[in-house]
Length: 182
Ligand SMILES: Cc1cc2nc3c(=O)[nH]c(=O)nc-3n(C[C@H](O)[C@H](O)[C@H](O)COP(=O)(O)O)c2cc1C
Image (cartoon, rainbow, N blue to C red; front, side):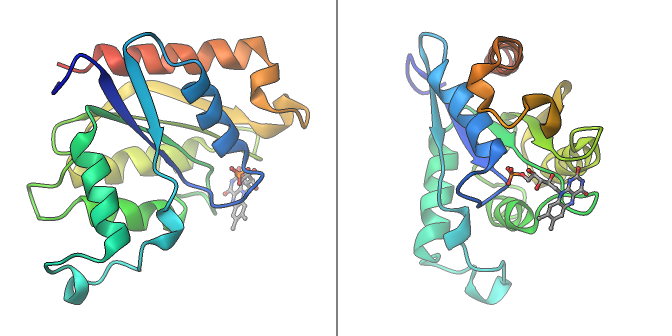
């Protein structure tokens, strides 16, 4: 930890304006515990597709911005839907960028938690598992015991901030993640 404040980088695996996962991220940010700053990196859609030919100095501007945000972070919270039983491409692309330089990415060893919501009855659990697997290989220390997979129909079309139960679960996730910061 570089300062008195714990910095948590938040990545959302959906680019959709009305994304339920973005709304869940908003809940986490709005309810940050004292001494914890959650910051959404909102530019995953600006990242080029990963290509080793362009992974050179200077890195593409959006890539550098992501790597800088990752370097500032003490932990990372991923909030994502499941796409076709797996991780959304936009999120996988971001993971590939932060995984480099190989063995020394900006999130190396930092605790990571993966949560989210999806349409299916299991709330995107496969996508969350795939994200944990990929992220764990990419460098962060994925905290496998932190999980929250919400079937979107349980939200009844409302913003998740309107559900005290969901807000409580999201807060619990953030508390557990912050407790992992050394
Ligand atoms: C390309 C695509 C693939 C999807 N695949 C799945 C899936 O495998 N499992 C699932 O539960 N929902 C799937 N969905 C539905 C999403 O879970 C749902 O649209 C969700 O609300 C997306 O998250 P968002 O609201 O944050 O954008 C898929 C949606 C899209 C657009």
